[in-house]
Length: 399
Image (cartoon, rainbow, N blue to C red):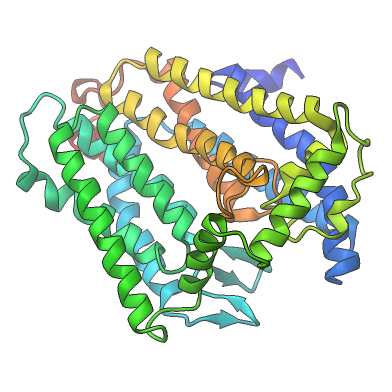
Protein backbone atom coordinates (compact mmCIF):
# COMPACT_ATOMS: atom_id res chain seq x y z
CA UNK A 1 0.00 0.00 0.00
CA UNK A 2 2.81 2.41 0.84
CA UNK A 3 4.36 1.83 -2.58
CA UNK A 4 1.15 3.16 -4.17
CA UNK A 5 1.61 6.53 -2.46
CA UNK A 6 5.09 6.79 -3.98
CA UNK A 7 3.46 7.20 -7.41
CA UNK A 8 0.85 9.70 -6.23
CA UNK A 9 2.11 13.27 -6.22
CA UNK A 10 0.48 16.59 -5.47
CA UNK A 11 -1.86 17.68 -2.68
CA UNK A 12 -2.76 14.59 -0.64
CA UNK A 13 -5.84 16.27 0.86
CA UNK A 14 -7.36 16.76 -2.60
CA UNK A 15 -6.60 13.14 -3.45
CA UNK A 16 -8.35 12.09 -0.23
CA UNK A 17 -11.41 14.27 -0.85
CA UNK A 18 -11.82 12.98 -4.41
CA UNK A 19 -11.43 9.37 -3.27
CA UNK A 20 -13.90 9.73 -0.38
CA UNK A 21 -16.53 11.41 -2.56
CA UNK A 22 -16.14 8.72 -5.22
CA UNK A 23 -16.38 5.87 -2.70
CA UNK A 24 -19.41 7.40 -1.02
CA UNK A 25 -21.14 7.86 -4.39
CA UNK A 26 -21.66 4.11 -4.77
CA UNK A 27 -24.28 4.04 -2.00
CA UNK A 28 -26.65 6.76 -3.30
CA UNK A 29 -26.15 5.82 -6.95
CA UNK A 30 -26.98 2.17 -6.25
CA UNK A 31 -30.02 3.21 -4.23
CA UNK A 32 -31.32 5.84 -6.65
CA UNK A 33 -30.77 3.65 -9.72
CA UNK A 34 -33.84 1.64 -8.70
CA UNK A 35 -35.84 4.48 -10.26
CA UNK A 36 -34.27 3.73 -13.63
CA UNK A 37 -34.85 0.01 -13.23
CA UNK A 38 -38.35 -0.30 -11.79
CA UNK A 39 -39.94 2.94 -13.02
CA UNK A 40 -38.21 3.60 -16.34
CA UNK A 41 -37.41 -0.06 -16.99
CA UNK A 42 -33.77 0.50 -17.88
CA UNK A 43 -31.30 -2.26 -16.97
CA UNK A 44 -30.61 -3.56 -13.46
CA UNK A 45 -29.40 -1.88 -10.28
CA UNK A 46 -26.21 -3.94 -10.33
CA UNK A 47 -25.66 -3.02 -13.96
CA UNK A 48 -25.92 0.69 -13.16
CA UNK A 49 -23.57 0.25 -10.21
CA UNK A 50 -20.99 -1.54 -12.36
CA UNK A 51 -21.27 1.15 -15.04
CA UNK A 52 -20.78 3.86 -12.41
CA UNK A 53 -17.74 2.02 -11.04
CA UNK A 54 -16.25 1.68 -14.52
CA UNK A 55 -16.78 5.37 -15.28
CA UNK A 56 -15.15 6.42 -12.00
CA UNK A 57 -12.26 4.02 -12.58
CA UNK A 58 -11.63 5.59 -15.99
CA UNK A 59 -12.02 9.05 -14.44
CA UNK A 60 -9.39 8.38 -11.81
CA UNK A 61 -7.16 7.00 -14.55
CA UNK A 62 -7.51 10.36 -16.29
CA UNK A 63 -6.78 12.14 -13.02
CA UNK A 64 -3.64 10.08 -12.40
CA UNK A 65 -2.34 10.57 -15.94
CA UNK A 66 -3.00 14.32 -15.99
CA UNK A 67 -1.41 14.93 -12.60
CA UNK A 68 1.86 13.59 -14.05
CA UNK A 69 1.88 16.28 -16.75
CA UNK A 70 3.98 19.39 -15.95
CA UNK A 71 1.70 22.39 -15.49
CA UNK A 72 3.27 24.56 -18.20
CA UNK A 73 2.35 21.94 -20.81
CA UNK A 74 -1.30 22.97 -20.48
CA UNK A 75 -0.53 26.31 -22.13
CA UNK A 76 0.24 24.69 -25.46
CA UNK A 77 -2.35 21.95 -25.02
CA UNK A 78 -5.13 24.52 -24.57
CA UNK A 79 -4.29 26.06 -27.95
CA UNK A 80 -4.49 22.64 -29.56
CA UNK A 81 -7.65 21.54 -27.74
CA UNK A 82 -9.71 24.72 -28.21
CA UNK A 83 -10.29 24.29 -31.99
CA UNK A 84 -11.13 20.64 -31.36
CA UNK A 85 -13.82 21.41 -28.78
CA UNK A 86 -15.27 24.12 -31.03
CA UNK A 87 -15.56 21.56 -33.82
CA UNK A 88 -17.21 19.07 -31.45
CA UNK A 89 -19.70 21.70 -30.26
CA UNK A 90 -20.62 22.54 -33.86
CA UNK A 91 -20.94 18.84 -34.63
CA UNK A 92 -23.39 18.06 -31.81
CA UNK A 93 -25.40 21.20 -32.56
CA UNK A 94 -25.73 20.09 -36.19
CA UNK A 95 -26.95 16.59 -35.28
CA UNK A 96 -30.56 17.72 -34.98
CA UNK A 97 -32.98 17.62 -32.12
CA UNK A 98 -32.95 13.99 -31.07
CA UNK A 99 -31.29 10.60 -31.35
CA UNK A 100 -33.44 7.73 -30.20
CA UNK A 101 -35.78 10.15 -28.50
CA UNK A 102 -33.01 11.88 -26.55
CA UNK A 103 -31.75 15.39 -27.09
CA UNK A 104 -28.78 15.17 -29.45
CA UNK A 105 -27.53 18.74 -29.23
CA UNK A 106 -25.60 17.84 -26.06
CA UNK A 107 -24.18 14.39 -26.74
CA UNK A 108 -21.92 12.49 -29.07
CA UNK A 109 -22.75 8.81 -28.93
CA UNK A 110 -19.82 6.38 -28.93
CA UNK A 111 -21.27 3.09 -30.27
CA UNK A 112 -18.24 0.91 -29.49
CA UNK A 113 -18.31 1.51 -25.74
CA UNK A 114 -22.00 2.39 -25.46
CA UNK A 115 -21.33 5.70 -23.68
CA UNK A 116 -22.27 9.24 -24.57
CA UNK A 117 -19.81 12.12 -24.54
CA UNK A 118 -20.86 15.69 -23.73
CA UNK A 119 -18.43 18.15 -25.39
CA UNK A 120 -19.69 21.12 -23.35
CA UNK A 121 -18.05 19.71 -20.21
CA UNK A 122 -14.72 19.36 -21.99
CA UNK A 123 -15.13 22.82 -23.50
CA UNK A 124 -15.55 24.32 -20.03
CA UNK A 125 -12.22 22.92 -18.80
CA UNK A 126 -10.31 23.74 -21.98
CA UNK A 127 -11.67 27.28 -22.11
CA UNK A 128 -10.67 27.99 -18.50
CA UNK A 129 -7.12 26.79 -19.20
CA UNK A 130 -7.02 28.95 -22.33
CA UNK A 131 -8.25 32.05 -20.44
CA UNK A 132 -5.71 31.44 -17.65
CA UNK A 133 -2.96 31.27 -20.27
CA UNK A 134 -4.02 34.57 -21.85
CA UNK A 135 -4.39 36.39 -18.53
CA UNK A 136 -0.93 35.24 -17.43
CA UNK A 137 0.52 36.68 -20.66
CA UNK A 138 -0.99 40.14 -20.14
CA UNK A 139 -0.48 40.25 -16.38
CA UNK A 140 2.32 42.82 -16.55
CA UNK A 141 1.21 44.43 -19.81
CA UNK A 142 -1.32 47.22 -20.21
CA UNK A 143 -3.84 45.84 -22.69
CA UNK A 144 -6.77 47.63 -24.29
CA UNK A 145 -10.18 46.12 -24.78
CA UNK A 146 -9.74 46.17 -28.54
CA UNK A 147 -6.53 44.15 -28.27
CA UNK A 148 -8.22 41.50 -26.10
CA UNK A 149 -11.38 41.02 -28.16
CA UNK A 150 -9.94 38.58 -30.69
CA UNK A 151 -7.58 36.46 -28.53
CA UNK A 152 -9.78 36.37 -25.40
CA UNK A 153 -13.43 37.16 -25.94
CA UNK A 154 -14.01 35.65 -29.37
CA UNK A 155 -13.23 32.07 -28.18
CA UNK A 156 -15.38 32.68 -25.09
CA UNK A 157 -18.23 33.98 -27.26
CA UNK A 158 -18.11 31.02 -29.65
CA UNK A 159 -18.04 28.42 -26.87
CA UNK A 160 -20.91 30.02 -24.95
CA UNK A 161 -22.95 30.64 -28.11
CA UNK A 162 -22.61 27.04 -29.29
CA UNK A 163 -23.64 25.63 -25.89
CA UNK A 164 -26.44 28.12 -25.13
CA UNK A 165 -29.30 26.71 -27.28
CA UNK A 166 -28.99 23.20 -25.86
CA UNK A 167 -27.74 23.87 -22.33
CA UNK A 168 -28.41 27.32 -20.91
CA UNK A 169 -27.21 26.51 -17.38
CA UNK A 170 -23.81 25.22 -18.54
CA UNK A 171 -23.36 28.24 -20.83
CA UNK A 172 -24.24 30.60 -17.95
CA UNK A 173 -21.84 28.85 -15.58
CA UNK A 174 -18.98 28.94 -18.10
CA UNK A 175 -19.56 32.65 -18.80
CA UNK A 176 -19.74 33.44 -15.07
CA UNK A 177 -16.57 31.49 -14.32
CA UNK A 178 -14.68 33.22 -17.15
CA UNK A 179 -15.72 36.61 -15.75
CA UNK A 180 -14.63 35.56 -12.27
CA UNK A 181 -11.25 34.33 -13.52
CA UNK A 182 -10.73 37.55 -15.48
CA UNK A 183 -11.50 39.54 -12.33
CA UNK A 184 -9.04 37.48 -10.30
CA UNK A 185 -6.48 37.78 -13.09
CA UNK A 186 -6.54 41.57 -12.96
CA UNK A 187 -8.45 42.20 -16.19
CA UNK A 188 -9.74 45.83 -16.09
CA UNK A 189 -13.10 46.07 -14.32
CA UNK A 190 -14.46 48.65 -16.77
CA UNK A 191 -13.97 46.18 -19.61
CA UNK A 192 -15.62 43.38 -17.62
CA UNK A 193 -18.69 45.55 -17.03
CA UNK A 194 -18.89 46.11 -20.77
CA UNK A 195 -18.68 42.37 -21.40
CA UNK A 196 -21.46 41.73 -18.88
CA UNK A 197 -23.66 44.28 -20.60
CA UNK A 198 -22.88 42.84 -24.02
CA UNK A 199 -23.64 39.34 -22.78
CA UNK A 200 -26.99 40.44 -21.35
CA UNK A 201 -27.86 42.15 -24.64
CA UNK A 202 -26.92 39.08 -26.69
CA UNK A 203 -29.00 36.83 -24.41
CA UNK A 204 -31.99 39.15 -24.76
CA UNK A 205 -31.69 39.15 -28.54
CA UNK A 206 -31.36 35.36 -28.51
CA UNK A 207 -34.54 34.98 -26.45
CA UNK A 208 -36.46 37.37 -28.71
CA UNK A 209 -35.26 35.50 -31.78
CA UNK A 210 -36.25 32.17 -30.23
CA UNK A 211 -39.72 33.55 -29.46
CA UNK A 212 -40.11 35.01 -32.94
CA UNK A 213 -38.88 31.88 -34.74
CA UNK A 214 -39.60 28.86 -32.50
CA UNK A 215 -38.63 26.39 -35.24
CA UNK A 216 -35.22 27.96 -35.74
CA UNK A 217 -33.73 26.43 -32.58
CA UNK A 218 -34.09 23.01 -30.90
CA UNK A 219 -36.88 22.74 -28.36
CA UNK A 220 -34.30 22.86 -25.57
CA UNK A 221 -34.66 26.66 -25.77
CA UNK A 222 -38.29 26.34 -24.73
CA UNK A 223 -37.26 23.96 -21.95
CA UNK A 224 -34.83 26.27 -20.18
CA UNK A 225 -37.08 29.27 -20.74
CA UNK A 226 -40.00 27.41 -19.19
CA UNK A 227 -37.82 26.48 -16.20
CA UNK A 228 -37.05 30.12 -15.56
CA UNK A 229 -40.72 31.01 -15.94
CA UNK A 230 -41.84 28.23 -13.60
CA UNK A 231 -39.26 29.27 -10.99
CA UNK A 232 -40.50 32.87 -11.05
CA UNK A 233 -44.19 31.90 -11.37
CA UNK A 234 -44.83 28.45 -9.82
CA UNK A 235 -47.20 26.32 -11.87
CA UNK A 236 -47.99 22.65 -12.25
CA UNK A 237 -45.01 21.84 -14.46
CA UNK A 238 -42.57 18.95 -14.59
CA UNK A 239 -39.86 21.17 -13.10
CA UNK A 240 -42.04 21.99 -10.09
CA UNK A 241 -42.97 18.31 -9.79
CA UNK A 242 -39.27 17.51 -9.44
CA UNK A 243 -38.75 20.27 -6.90
CA UNK A 244 -41.75 19.19 -4.83
CA UNK A 245 -40.55 15.59 -4.70
CA UNK A 246 -37.03 16.76 -3.83
CA UNK A 247 -38.33 18.89 -0.96
CA UNK A 248 -40.44 15.99 0.32
CA UNK A 249 -37.33 13.79 0.28
CA UNK A 250 -35.30 16.39 2.18
CA UNK A 251 -38.06 17.04 4.73
CA UNK A 252 -38.60 13.33 5.40
CA UNK A 253 -34.88 12.74 5.96
CA UNK A 254 -34.88 14.51 9.32
CA UNK A 255 -31.66 14.83 11.27
CA UNK A 256 -30.05 11.45 10.62
CA UNK A 257 -32.07 10.12 7.68
CA UNK A 258 -33.93 6.92 6.96
CA UNK A 259 -30.79 4.88 6.33
CA UNK A 260 -28.86 3.77 3.27
CA UNK A 261 -31.12 2.48 0.49
CA UNK A 262 -34.35 3.34 2.32
CA UNK A 263 -35.36 6.38 0.30
CA UNK A 264 -39.00 6.45 -0.80
CA UNK A 265 -38.92 9.47 -3.08
CA UNK A 266 -36.28 7.90 -5.34
CA UNK A 267 -39.18 5.95 -6.88
CA UNK A 268 -41.01 9.16 -7.81
CA UNK A 269 -38.27 11.74 -8.36
CA UNK A 270 -37.02 11.94 -11.98
CA UNK A 271 -33.22 12.11 -12.38
CA UNK A 272 -32.83 10.86 -8.81
CA UNK A 273 -29.42 9.33 -9.56
CA UNK A 274 -28.01 12.44 -11.26
CA UNK A 275 -29.49 15.94 -11.07
CA UNK A 276 -31.43 15.38 -7.82
CA UNK A 277 -29.19 12.90 -6.07
CA UNK A 278 -28.54 15.37 -3.24
CA UNK A 279 -32.21 15.17 -2.21
CA UNK A 280 -31.92 11.37 -2.02
CA UNK A 281 -28.72 11.67 0.04
CA UNK A 282 -30.44 13.94 2.56
CA UNK A 283 -33.45 11.63 2.72
CA UNK A 284 -31.26 8.61 3.45
CA UNK A 285 -28.54 10.25 5.56
CA UNK A 286 -30.40 13.21 6.99
CA UNK A 287 -29.35 16.78 7.60
CA UNK A 288 -26.08 15.54 9.09
CA UNK A 289 -25.21 13.66 5.91
CA UNK A 290 -26.13 16.61 3.70
CA UNK A 291 -24.01 19.00 5.77
CA UNK A 292 -21.11 16.55 5.84
CA UNK A 293 -21.18 16.34 2.05
CA UNK A 294 -21.26 20.13 1.78
CA UNK A 295 -18.30 20.29 4.17
CA UNK A 296 -16.19 18.12 1.85
CA UNK A 297 -16.88 20.41 -1.10
CA UNK A 298 -16.04 23.48 0.97
CA UNK A 299 -12.89 21.76 2.21
CA UNK A 300 -12.03 21.08 -1.43
CA UNK A 301 -12.50 24.81 -2.08
CA UNK A 302 -10.14 25.57 0.80
CA UNK A 303 -7.46 23.25 -0.56
CA UNK A 304 -7.87 24.73 -4.06
CA UNK A 305 -7.18 28.19 -2.64
CA UNK A 306 -4.20 26.82 -0.66
CA UNK A 307 -2.75 25.19 -3.78
CA UNK A 308 -3.27 28.35 -5.84
CA UNK A 309 -1.59 30.45 -3.16
CA UNK A 310 1.38 28.07 -3.11
CA UNK A 311 1.97 28.17 -6.87
CA UNK A 312 5.00 30.18 -7.98
CA UNK A 313 3.73 31.41 -11.37
CA UNK A 314 0.72 33.51 -12.34
CA UNK A 315 -0.38 30.92 -14.89
CA UNK A 316 -0.42 28.14 -12.29
CA UNK A 317 -2.40 30.25 -9.83
CA UNK A 318 -5.01 31.19 -12.40
CA UNK A 319 -5.09 27.66 -13.78
CA UNK A 320 -5.90 26.13 -10.39
CA UNK A 321 -8.62 28.68 -9.67
CA UNK A 322 -10.00 28.48 -13.20
CA UNK A 323 -10.55 24.72 -13.25
CA UNK A 324 -11.10 24.23 -9.51
CA UNK A 325 -13.69 26.82 -8.53
CA UNK A 326 -16.28 25.62 -11.12
CA UNK A 327 -16.28 22.18 -9.44
CA UNK A 328 -17.35 23.65 -6.10
CA UNK A 329 -19.66 26.14 -7.80
CA UNK A 330 -21.44 23.33 -9.67
CA UNK A 331 -21.82 21.31 -6.45
CA UNK A 332 -23.38 24.27 -4.64
CA UNK A 333 -25.75 24.89 -7.56
CA UNK A 334 -26.85 21.25 -7.51
CA UNK A 335 -27.60 21.50 -3.79
CA UNK A 336 -29.35 24.86 -4.22
CA UNK A 337 -31.64 23.42 -6.90
CA UNK A 338 -32.72 20.62 -4.57
CA UNK A 339 -33.89 23.15 -1.95
CA UNK A 340 -35.43 25.49 -4.59
CA UNK A 341 -32.91 28.30 -4.22
CA UNK A 342 -32.17 27.96 -7.96
CA UNK A 343 -34.35 26.93 -10.91
CA UNK A 344 -33.85 23.41 -12.25
CA UNK A 345 -30.55 23.42 -14.13
CA UNK A 346 -29.58 19.83 -14.91
CA UNK A 347 -26.16 20.16 -13.24
CA UNK A 348 -24.71 16.99 -11.71
CA UNK A 349 -23.15 16.70 -8.26
CA UNK A 350 -19.41 16.32 -9.02
CA UNK A 351 -17.99 12.84 -8.34
CA UNK A 352 -21.32 11.75 -6.81
CA UNK A 353 -23.96 11.74 -9.55
CA UNK A 354 -24.03 9.02 -12.16
CA UNK A 355 -22.82 10.15 -15.57
CA UNK A 356 -19.59 9.62 -17.45
CA UNK A 357 -18.63 12.92 -19.07
CA UNK A 358 -19.22 15.02 -15.96
CA UNK A 359 -17.16 12.64 -13.80
CA UNK A 360 -14.36 12.45 -16.36
CA UNK A 361 -14.11 16.21 -16.75
CA UNK A 362 -14.17 16.69 -12.97
CA UNK A 363 -11.32 14.21 -12.71
CA UNK A 364 -9.51 16.01 -15.53
CA UNK A 365 -9.83 19.32 -13.67
CA UNK A 366 -8.68 17.79 -10.38
CA UNK A 367 -5.73 16.21 -12.20
CA UNK A 368 -4.70 19.67 -13.45
CA UNK A 369 -4.93 21.03 -9.90
CA UNK A 370 -2.80 18.15 -8.62
CA UNK A 371 -0.26 18.82 -11.35
CA UNK A 372 0.01 22.43 -10.19
CA UNK A 373 0.41 21.27 -6.57
CA UNK A 374 3.19 18.84 -7.49
CA UNK A 375 6.37 20.24 -5.95
CA UNK A 376 8.42 18.29 -8.48
CA UNK A 377 7.26 20.73 -11.18
CA UNK A 378 7.99 23.90 -9.20
CA UNK A 379 10.35 26.30 -10.87
CA UNK A 380 10.02 24.64 -14.28
CA UNK A 381 7.60 27.13 -15.80
CA UNK A 382 10.20 29.55 -17.14
CA UNK A 383 11.59 29.04 -20.61
CA UNK A 384 15.13 28.98 -19.23
CA UNK A 385 14.33 25.83 -17.28
CA UNK A 386 12.80 23.92 -20.18
CA UNK A 387 14.31 20.94 -21.92
CA UNK A 388 15.46 22.21 -25.32
CA UNK A 389 15.21 18.68 -26.74
CA UNK A 390 11.51 18.53 -25.97
CA UNK A 391 9.58 20.62 -28.56
CA UNK A 392 6.34 20.58 -26.54
CA UNK A 393 8.14 21.99 -23.49
CA UNK A 394 9.73 24.77 -25.54
CA UNK A 395 6.39 25.59 -27.23
CA UNK A 396 4.56 25.64 -23.90
CA UNK A 397 7.18 27.88 -22.35
CA UNK A 398 7.02 30.35 -25.24
CA UNK A 399 3.21 30.45 -25.18
